[in-house]
Image (cartoon, rainbow, N blue to C red; front, side, top):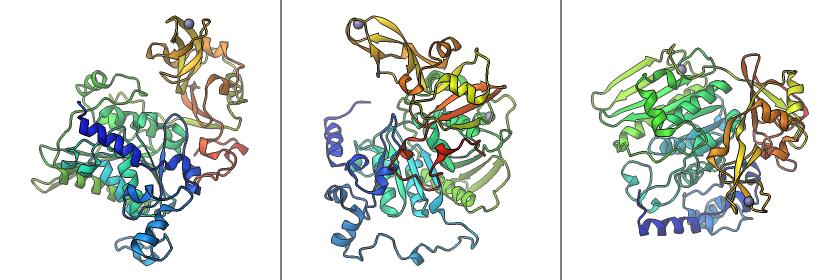
Length: 480
Ligand SMILES: [Zn+2]
Ligand SMILES: [Zn+2]
Protein backbone atom coordinates (compact mmCIF):
# COMPACT_ATOMS: atom_id res chain seq x y z
CA UNK A 1 0.00 0.00 0.00
CA UNK A 2 1.51 3.33 -1.01
CA UNK A 3 1.84 6.02 1.57
CA UNK A 4 1.05 9.47 0.21
CA UNK A 5 3.15 12.47 1.18
CA UNK A 6 0.16 13.81 3.06
CA UNK A 7 -0.03 10.57 4.94
CA UNK A 8 3.64 10.70 5.83
CA UNK A 9 3.16 14.22 7.16
CA UNK A 10 0.27 13.06 9.25
CA UNK A 11 2.31 10.19 10.61
CA UNK A 12 4.98 12.69 11.63
CA UNK A 13 2.41 15.05 13.07
CA UNK A 14 0.85 12.18 14.98
CA UNK A 15 4.20 11.21 16.43
CA UNK A 16 4.93 14.75 17.54
CA UNK A 17 1.49 15.12 19.12
CA UNK A 18 1.37 11.94 21.05
CA UNK A 19 2.35 12.25 24.68
CA UNK A 20 5.02 9.83 25.85
CA UNK A 21 2.96 8.55 28.73
CA UNK A 22 4.74 5.26 29.07
CA UNK A 23 7.98 6.83 30.17
CA UNK A 24 7.33 10.30 31.50
CA UNK A 25 4.02 10.07 33.35
CA UNK A 26 4.82 10.36 36.99
CA UNK A 27 1.67 8.66 38.24
CA UNK A 28 0.85 5.23 39.63
CA UNK A 29 -0.50 4.27 36.23
CA UNK A 30 2.92 4.44 34.62
CA UNK A 31 4.16 1.80 37.02
CA UNK A 32 1.74 -0.70 35.60
CA UNK A 33 3.17 -0.57 32.09
CA UNK A 34 3.96 -4.11 31.02
CA UNK A 35 7.45 -3.99 29.56
CA UNK A 36 9.12 -6.48 27.27
CA UNK A 37 9.63 -6.58 23.55
CA UNK A 38 6.62 -4.42 22.77
CA UNK A 39 5.98 -0.87 23.86
CA UNK A 40 2.79 -0.15 25.74
CA UNK A 41 1.15 3.21 25.98
CA UNK A 42 -0.83 3.77 29.13
CA UNK A 43 -3.56 6.32 28.72
CA UNK A 44 -4.29 8.89 31.37
CA UNK A 45 -7.83 10.20 31.59
CA UNK A 46 -8.61 12.97 29.11
CA UNK A 47 -12.26 13.87 29.25
CA UNK A 48 -12.66 15.17 25.73
CA UNK A 49 -10.43 12.57 24.13
CA UNK A 50 -8.12 15.04 22.44
CA UNK A 51 -4.39 14.51 22.39
CA UNK A 52 -3.68 18.20 22.31
CA UNK A 53 -5.16 18.61 25.78
CA UNK A 54 -3.01 15.82 27.12
CA UNK A 55 0.07 17.13 25.35
CA UNK A 56 -0.24 20.51 26.99
CA UNK A 57 0.01 19.02 30.45
CA UNK A 58 3.31 18.63 32.21
CA UNK A 59 4.16 14.98 32.90
CA UNK A 60 3.92 15.57 36.64
CA UNK A 61 0.33 16.83 36.36
CA UNK A 62 -2.79 14.77 36.03
CA UNK A 63 -3.98 15.55 32.51
CA UNK A 64 -7.61 14.67 33.19
CA UNK A 65 -7.71 16.91 36.21
CA UNK A 66 -6.19 19.77 34.28
CA UNK A 67 -8.84 19.47 31.60
CA UNK A 68 -11.60 19.40 34.18
CA UNK A 69 -10.24 22.47 35.90
CA UNK A 70 -9.36 24.63 32.95
CA UNK A 71 -11.56 23.55 30.09
CA UNK A 72 -14.80 22.44 31.65
CA UNK A 73 -14.57 24.34 34.90
CA UNK A 74 -15.87 21.39 36.91
CA UNK A 75 -15.03 20.15 40.40
CA UNK A 76 -11.46 18.98 40.84
CA UNK A 77 -12.44 15.36 41.05
CA UNK A 78 -11.90 12.74 38.37
CA UNK A 79 -14.62 10.37 39.44
CA UNK A 80 -18.11 11.18 38.17
CA UNK A 81 -20.85 11.00 40.84
CA UNK A 82 -21.58 7.33 41.45
CA UNK A 83 -25.28 7.55 40.60
CA UNK A 84 -24.33 8.51 37.03
CA UNK A 85 -22.79 5.05 36.74
CA UNK A 86 -25.96 3.39 38.01
CA UNK A 87 -27.43 2.14 34.77
CA UNK A 88 -30.67 0.26 34.20
CA UNK A 89 -30.72 -3.40 33.32
CA UNK A 90 -27.79 -4.29 35.53
CA UNK A 91 -28.86 -7.16 37.78
CA UNK A 92 -28.75 -6.25 41.45
CA UNK A 93 -26.42 -9.16 42.13
CA UNK A 94 -23.98 -7.99 39.42
CA UNK A 95 -20.47 -7.32 40.53
CA UNK A 96 -18.85 -4.09 39.38
CA UNK A 97 -16.49 -4.51 36.48
CA UNK A 98 -13.71 -2.37 37.92
CA UNK A 99 -11.74 -5.44 39.00
CA UNK A 100 -12.11 -7.13 35.60
CA UNK A 101 -9.32 -7.32 33.06
CA UNK A 102 -9.74 -7.67 29.32
CA UNK A 103 -7.59 -7.83 26.23
CA UNK A 104 -8.96 -6.88 22.82
CA UNK A 105 -6.92 -8.11 19.85
CA UNK A 106 -7.67 -6.05 16.76
CA UNK A 107 -8.89 -2.45 17.11
CA UNK A 108 -10.50 -2.04 13.70
CA UNK A 109 -14.09 -1.45 12.73
CA UNK A 110 -15.43 -4.04 15.21
CA UNK A 111 -12.69 -4.07 17.86
CA UNK A 112 -12.16 -0.32 17.97
CA UNK A 113 -15.82 0.29 18.77
CA UNK A 114 -15.90 -2.58 21.22
CA UNK A 115 -12.81 -1.24 23.01
CA UNK A 116 -14.36 2.14 23.72
CA UNK A 117 -17.70 0.58 24.67
CA UNK A 118 -15.99 -1.70 27.22
CA UNK A 119 -14.40 1.33 28.79
CA UNK A 120 -17.90 2.82 29.07
CA UNK A 121 -18.92 -0.27 31.07
CA UNK A 122 -16.20 0.52 33.59
CA UNK A 123 -13.88 -2.43 32.98
CA UNK A 124 -10.97 -2.07 35.39
CA UNK A 125 -8.07 -2.96 33.10
CA UNK A 126 -8.35 -2.75 29.36
CA UNK A 127 -5.52 -3.84 27.06
CA UNK A 128 -5.73 -3.43 23.30
CA UNK A 129 -3.40 -4.35 20.45
CA UNK A 130 -3.44 -3.60 16.74
CA UNK A 131 -0.43 -3.20 14.45
CA UNK A 132 -2.11 -0.93 11.88
CA UNK A 133 -2.60 2.76 11.26
CA UNK A 134 -5.68 4.50 9.90
CA UNK A 135 -5.83 5.45 6.23
CA UNK A 136 -7.47 8.68 5.03
CA UNK A 137 -10.56 6.67 3.97
CA UNK A 138 -10.72 4.57 7.15
CA UNK A 139 -13.52 6.71 8.55
CA UNK A 140 -15.90 5.10 6.06
CA UNK A 141 -15.85 1.87 8.05
CA UNK A 142 -13.70 2.42 11.16
CA UNK A 143 -14.49 4.49 14.25
CA UNK A 144 -11.98 7.10 13.08
CA UNK A 145 -12.00 10.65 11.78
CA UNK A 146 -10.23 11.95 8.70
CA UNK A 147 -7.77 13.72 10.98
CA UNK A 148 -6.79 10.31 12.43
CA UNK A 149 -5.24 9.21 9.11
CA UNK A 150 -1.69 8.03 9.68
CA UNK A 151 -2.17 7.57 13.40
CA UNK A 152 -1.95 4.16 15.04
CA UNK A 153 -5.30 2.53 15.75
CA UNK A 154 -3.95 1.48 19.14
CA UNK A 155 -3.12 5.09 19.95
CA UNK A 156 -6.47 6.54 18.88
CA UNK A 157 -8.56 3.80 20.52
CA UNK A 158 -6.50 3.96 23.73
CA UNK A 159 -6.97 7.68 23.95
CA UNK A 160 -10.72 7.49 23.34
CA UNK A 161 -11.32 4.58 25.71
CA UNK A 162 -9.47 6.41 28.48
CA UNK A 163 -11.44 9.56 27.75
CA UNK A 164 -14.75 7.78 28.36
CA UNK A 165 -14.10 6.64 31.90
CA UNK A 166 -11.29 8.36 33.78
CA UNK A 167 -10.92 5.70 36.47
CA UNK A 168 -10.12 2.77 34.21
CA UNK A 169 -6.67 1.53 33.34
CA UNK A 170 -6.14 1.53 29.57
CA UNK A 171 -2.97 0.26 27.88
CA UNK A 172 -2.49 -0.25 24.14
CA UNK A 173 0.31 -1.41 21.86
CA UNK A 174 0.82 -1.22 18.10
CA UNK A 175 1.51 -4.88 17.61
CA UNK A 176 -0.12 -8.14 16.63
CA UNK A 177 -1.57 -10.30 19.40
CA UNK A 178 0.98 -13.03 18.73
CA UNK A 179 3.59 -10.77 20.35
CA UNK A 180 1.65 -10.20 23.56
CA UNK A 181 3.48 -11.94 26.41
CA UNK A 182 1.83 -15.03 27.86
CA UNK A 183 1.85 -13.62 31.38
CA UNK A 184 -0.45 -10.82 30.24
CA UNK A 185 -2.80 -13.25 28.45
CA UNK A 186 -2.86 -15.21 31.68
CA UNK A 187 -3.40 -12.06 33.75
CA UNK A 188 -6.60 -10.97 31.94
CA UNK A 189 -10.00 -12.53 32.68
CA UNK A 190 -11.29 -12.63 29.13
CA UNK A 191 -9.87 -12.43 25.62
CA UNK A 192 -11.55 -10.76 22.68
CA UNK A 193 -10.63 -11.37 19.04
CA UNK A 194 -11.72 -8.83 16.47
CA UNK A 195 -8.89 -9.03 13.98
CA UNK A 196 -9.04 -9.42 10.23
CA UNK A 197 -7.08 -12.61 9.83
CA UNK A 198 -7.67 -16.19 10.82
CA UNK A 199 -4.10 -16.80 11.91
CA UNK A 200 -4.46 -14.50 14.91
CA UNK A 201 -7.83 -15.96 15.80
CA UNK A 202 -6.44 -19.50 15.74
CA UNK A 203 -3.37 -18.46 17.74
CA UNK A 204 -5.58 -16.79 20.31
CA UNK A 205 -7.86 -19.84 20.39
CA UNK A 206 -4.95 -22.20 21.03
CA UNK A 207 -3.48 -19.94 23.72
CA UNK A 208 -6.85 -19.29 25.38
CA UNK A 209 -7.50 -23.05 25.43
CA UNK A 210 -4.06 -23.63 26.97
CA UNK A 211 -4.72 -21.04 29.67
CA UNK A 212 -8.40 -22.05 30.10
CA UNK A 213 -9.87 -18.64 29.20
CA UNK A 214 -13.07 -17.55 27.51
CA UNK A 215 -12.60 -16.08 24.03
CA UNK A 216 -15.19 -13.85 22.38
CA UNK A 217 -14.96 -13.06 18.68
CA UNK A 218 -16.67 -10.21 16.86
CA UNK A 219 -16.94 -10.63 13.08
CA UNK A 220 -19.00 -9.53 10.07
CA UNK A 221 -20.14 -10.66 6.66
CA UNK A 222 -20.40 -7.53 4.55
CA UNK A 223 -22.40 -8.99 1.65
CA UNK A 224 -25.26 -10.28 3.79
CA UNK A 225 -25.15 -7.45 6.39
CA UNK A 226 -24.60 -10.06 9.07
CA UNK A 227 -23.01 -9.32 12.42
CA UNK A 228 -21.46 -12.30 14.23
CA UNK A 229 -20.44 -12.84 17.78
CA UNK A 230 -18.88 -16.18 18.67
CA UNK A 231 -18.41 -17.11 22.28
CA UNK A 232 -15.80 -19.84 22.76
CA UNK A 233 -15.83 -21.33 26.21
CA UNK A 234 -12.27 -22.61 26.16
CA UNK A 235 -12.22 -23.34 29.87
CA UNK A 236 -13.13 -26.86 28.81
CA UNK A 237 -11.00 -28.48 26.09
CA UNK A 238 -13.98 -30.40 24.70
CA UNK A 239 -15.81 -27.25 23.64
CA UNK A 240 -15.53 -25.90 20.11
CA UNK A 241 -12.51 -23.68 19.39
CA UNK A 242 -12.09 -21.26 16.45
CA UNK A 243 -10.35 -24.02 14.48
CA UNK A 244 -13.42 -26.27 14.81
CA UNK A 245 -15.43 -23.86 12.64
CA UNK A 246 -13.00 -24.05 9.71
CA UNK A 247 -13.45 -26.45 6.82
CA UNK A 248 -10.67 -28.51 5.26
CA UNK A 249 -10.38 -26.05 2.40
CA UNK A 250 -9.87 -23.11 4.78
CA UNK A 251 -6.68 -24.47 6.31
CA UNK A 252 -4.33 -24.32 3.28
CA UNK A 253 -5.39 -20.69 2.76
CA UNK A 254 -4.34 -19.82 6.27
CA UNK A 255 -0.92 -21.35 5.80
CA UNK A 256 -0.37 -19.70 2.44
CA UNK A 257 -1.29 -16.26 3.62
CA UNK A 258 0.31 -16.19 7.01
CA UNK A 259 2.96 -18.87 7.17
CA UNK A 260 3.37 -20.61 10.48
CA UNK A 261 5.60 -18.26 12.43
CA UNK A 262 3.28 -16.94 15.12
CA UNK A 263 5.70 -14.18 16.01
CA UNK A 264 5.59 -12.65 12.55
CA UNK A 265 3.33 -9.58 12.34
CA UNK A 266 0.30 -10.29 10.19
CA UNK A 267 0.65 -8.82 6.71
CA UNK A 268 -1.84 -6.14 5.73
CA UNK A 269 -5.11 -7.64 4.62
CA UNK A 270 -7.39 -6.25 1.92
CA UNK A 271 -10.26 -4.30 3.39
CA UNK A 272 -13.60 -6.08 3.70
CA UNK A 273 -15.30 -2.70 3.21
CA UNK A 274 -18.23 -3.82 5.33
CA UNK A 275 -20.90 -1.23 6.08
CA UNK A 276 -20.06 0.48 9.37
CA UNK A 277 -23.39 -0.24 11.05
CA UNK A 278 -22.86 -3.98 10.55
CA UNK A 279 -19.47 -3.71 12.29
CA UNK A 280 -20.97 -1.57 15.06
CA UNK A 281 -23.71 -4.21 15.57
CA UNK A 282 -21.11 -6.98 15.93
CA UNK A 283 -19.23 -4.86 18.46
CA UNK A 284 -22.36 -4.22 20.54
CA UNK A 285 -23.42 -7.89 20.57
CA UNK A 286 -19.92 -8.86 21.70
CA UNK A 287 -20.04 -6.18 24.39
CA UNK A 288 -23.34 -7.60 25.67
CA UNK A 289 -21.77 -11.07 25.83
CA UNK A 290 -18.86 -9.68 27.86
CA UNK A 291 -21.32 -8.06 30.29
CA UNK A 292 -23.37 -11.26 30.46
CA UNK A 293 -20.25 -13.24 31.31
CA UNK A 294 -18.89 -10.83 33.91
CA UNK A 295 -22.26 -10.30 35.59
CA UNK A 296 -22.65 -14.07 35.72
CA UNK A 297 -25.94 -14.11 33.85
CA UNK A 298 -26.87 -17.49 32.42
CA UNK A 299 -25.14 -17.97 29.05
CA UNK A 300 -27.32 -18.13 25.93
CA UNK A 301 -26.31 -21.79 25.81
CA UNK A 302 -23.60 -23.86 27.41
CA UNK A 303 -20.36 -24.54 25.58
CA UNK A 304 -19.36 -22.48 22.56
CA UNK A 305 -22.00 -20.72 20.48
CA UNK A 306 -22.53 -18.23 17.67
CA UNK A 307 -24.95 -15.32 17.52
CA UNK A 308 -25.66 -14.13 13.95
CA UNK A 309 -27.88 -11.13 13.33
CA UNK A 310 -28.72 -10.36 9.69
CA UNK A 311 -29.67 -6.73 9.26
CA UNK A 312 -31.11 -7.38 5.78
CA UNK A 313 -33.62 -10.03 6.84
CA UNK A 314 -33.77 -9.18 10.56
CA UNK A 315 -33.19 -12.83 11.26
CA UNK A 316 -31.35 -13.86 14.38
CA UNK A 317 -29.66 -17.23 14.60
CA UNK A 318 -28.12 -18.58 17.77
CA UNK A 319 -26.24 -21.78 17.04
CA UNK A 320 -24.23 -24.14 19.19
CA UNK A 321 -20.71 -24.51 17.81
CA UNK A 322 -19.85 -28.17 17.68
CA UNK A 323 -16.47 -29.60 18.54
CA UNK A 324 -15.00 -30.76 15.24
CA UNK A 325 -13.22 -34.11 15.73
CA UNK A 326 -10.95 -33.24 12.77
CA UNK A 327 -9.99 -29.87 14.20
CA UNK A 328 -6.31 -29.20 13.71
CA UNK A 329 -5.97 -27.18 16.91
CA UNK A 330 -4.54 -29.10 19.85
CA UNK A 331 -7.52 -28.76 22.26
CA UNK A 332 -5.25 -29.08 25.24
CA UNK A 333 -5.08 -27.25 28.50
CA UNK A 334 -1.58 -26.45 29.63
CA UNK A 335 -0.23 -27.31 33.01
CA UNK A 336 1.00 -23.96 34.30
CA UNK A 337 3.70 -23.58 36.92
CA UNK A 338 5.27 -20.51 38.48
CA UNK A 339 8.94 -20.69 39.27
CA UNK A 340 9.98 -18.31 42.04
CA UNK A 341 13.59 -18.02 40.88
CA UNK A 342 14.48 -15.02 38.76
CA UNK A 343 15.99 -15.71 35.32
CA UNK A 344 19.30 -14.47 36.78
CA UNK A 345 19.35 -17.64 38.88
CA UNK A 346 17.17 -20.17 37.07
CA UNK A 347 18.74 -22.55 34.55
CA UNK A 348 17.38 -25.31 32.31
CA UNK A 349 18.72 -27.72 34.94
CA UNK A 350 16.93 -26.00 37.83
CA UNK A 351 13.66 -25.87 35.87
CA UNK A 352 13.88 -29.62 35.16
CA UNK A 353 14.78 -30.19 38.81
CA UNK A 354 11.73 -28.27 40.01
CA UNK A 355 9.51 -30.30 37.72
CA UNK A 356 11.14 -33.52 38.87
CA UNK A 357 12.27 -34.44 35.35
CA UNK A 358 15.46 -36.41 35.11
CA UNK A 359 15.08 -37.31 31.41
CA UNK A 360 17.86 -35.48 29.54
CA UNK A 361 16.21 -35.82 26.12
CA UNK A 362 13.55 -33.25 26.94
CA UNK A 363 13.08 -30.40 24.43
CA UNK A 364 11.80 -26.98 25.42
CA UNK A 365 9.90 -24.45 23.42
CA UNK A 366 10.30 -20.89 24.61
CA UNK A 367 7.62 -18.25 24.47
CA UNK A 368 10.53 -16.19 23.14
CA UNK A 369 12.29 -17.31 19.95
CA UNK A 370 15.40 -19.45 20.28
CA UNK A 371 18.32 -18.29 18.18
CA UNK A 372 20.44 -21.13 16.81
CA UNK A 373 22.71 -19.09 14.55
CA UNK A 374 23.29 -15.46 13.60
CA UNK A 375 25.04 -13.49 10.87
CA UNK A 376 27.89 -11.04 11.40
CA UNK A 377 26.91 -7.62 10.20
CA UNK A 378 30.53 -6.82 9.30
CA UNK A 379 32.00 -9.95 7.64
CA UNK A 380 28.75 -11.70 6.69
CA UNK A 381 29.72 -15.03 8.30
CA UNK A 382 27.10 -17.16 10.01
CA UNK A 383 28.02 -18.37 13.49
CA UNK A 384 26.27 -20.78 15.86
CA UNK A 385 24.48 -19.08 18.78
CA UNK A 386 22.38 -20.71 21.47
CA UNK A 387 20.22 -18.18 23.25
CA UNK A 388 16.84 -16.41 23.29
CA UNK A 389 16.33 -13.40 21.09
CA UNK A 390 14.36 -11.62 18.41
CA UNK A 391 14.97 -11.39 14.69
CA UNK A 392 17.05 -8.27 14.10
CA UNK A 393 18.46 -8.26 17.63
CA UNK A 394 22.20 -8.41 18.34
CA UNK A 395 22.83 -11.78 19.97
CA UNK A 396 26.61 -11.89 20.13
CA UNK A 397 29.95 -10.67 18.80
CA UNK A 398 31.78 -12.20 15.83
CA UNK A 399 35.46 -13.19 15.99
CA UNK A 400 36.06 -10.19 13.70
CA UNK A 401 34.52 -7.91 16.30
CA UNK A 402 31.33 -7.21 14.33
CA UNK A 403 27.85 -7.64 15.85
CA UNK A 404 26.02 -10.96 15.30
CA UNK A 405 22.44 -10.27 14.25
CA UNK A 406 19.61 -12.82 14.47
CA UNK A 407 17.94 -13.55 11.11
CA UNK A 408 14.79 -15.63 10.43
CA UNK A 409 16.96 -18.52 9.15
CA UNK A 410 18.60 -18.93 12.55
CA UNK A 411 15.36 -18.95 14.56
CA UNK A 412 13.92 -22.15 16.04
CA UNK A 413 10.60 -22.72 17.76
CA UNK A 414 11.86 -25.78 19.61
CA UNK A 415 14.97 -25.73 21.76
CA UNK A 416 16.51 -29.12 21.03
CA UNK A 417 17.79 -31.34 23.83
CA UNK A 418 21.30 -30.85 22.39
CA UNK A 419 21.01 -27.08 22.92
CA UNK A 420 19.49 -27.56 26.36
CA UNK A 421 22.41 -29.82 27.29
CA UNK A 422 24.94 -27.28 26.00
CA UNK A 423 23.42 -24.44 28.05
CA UNK A 424 22.19 -26.58 30.92
CA UNK A 425 23.77 -24.63 33.78
CA UNK A 426 23.85 -21.14 32.23
CA UNK A 427 21.37 -18.76 33.93
CA UNK A 428 18.40 -18.17 31.63
CA UNK A 429 18.80 -14.42 32.09
CA UNK A 430 22.28 -14.65 30.54
CA UNK A 431 20.65 -16.42 27.60
CA UNK A 432 18.34 -13.44 26.97
CA UNK A 433 15.32 -14.87 28.79
CA UNK A 434 12.96 -12.17 30.09
CA UNK A 435 11.54 -12.27 33.59
CA UNK A 436 7.90 -13.39 33.62
CA UNK A 437 8.19 -15.18 30.28
CA UNK A 438 7.22 -18.83 29.86
CA UNK A 439 9.22 -21.92 28.97
CA UNK A 440 7.18 -24.71 27.45
CA UNK A 441 7.94 -28.40 27.54
CA UNK A 442 6.19 -31.69 27.17
CA UNK A 443 5.93 -33.29 30.57
CA UNK A 444 4.21 -36.68 30.93
CA UNK A 445 2.51 -36.09 27.57
CA UNK A 446 1.06 -32.81 28.78
CA UNK A 447 2.16 -29.38 27.57
CA UNK A 448 3.57 -27.57 30.57
CA UNK A 449 4.41 -23.89 30.70
CA UNK A 450 6.74 -22.68 33.40
CA UNK A 451 6.66 -18.95 34.12
CA UNK A 452 10.10 -17.96 35.34
CA UNK A 453 10.39 -14.93 37.61
CA UNK A 454 7.92 -12.13 38.23
CA UNK A 455 6.19 -10.36 35.32
CA UNK A 456 7.89 -7.09 34.36
CA UNK A 457 5.51 -4.77 36.21
CA UNK A 458 6.00 -6.59 39.48
CA UNK A 459 9.61 -5.54 39.91
CA UNK A 460 10.75 -3.95 43.14
CA UNK A 461 9.33 -0.52 43.84
CA UNK A 462 6.31 -0.78 41.58
CA UNK A 463 2.88 -1.63 42.78
CA UNK A 464 1.19 -4.72 41.41
CA UNK A 465 -1.68 -4.48 38.97
CA UNK A 466 -5.11 -4.83 40.59
CA UNK A 467 -6.03 -8.40 41.27
CA UNK A 468 -2.48 -9.69 41.13
CA UNK A 469 -0.83 -11.44 44.02
CA UNK A 470 1.49 -8.71 45.34
CA UNK A 471 4.24 -11.22 46.00
CA UNK A 472 3.91 -14.10 43.57
CA UNK A 473 7.59 -14.95 43.87
CA UNK A 474 7.15 -16.01 47.47
CA UNK A 475 5.50 -19.25 46.62
CA UNK A 476 5.29 -21.73 43.88
CA UNK A 477 1.74 -22.54 42.86
CA UNK A 478 -0.25 -24.33 40.27
CA UNK A 479 -2.73 -22.04 38.59
CA UNK A 480 -6.37 -23.10 38.92
ZN1 LIG B 1 -11.09 -27.01 17.57
ZN1 LIG C 1 32.43 -11.01 11.52
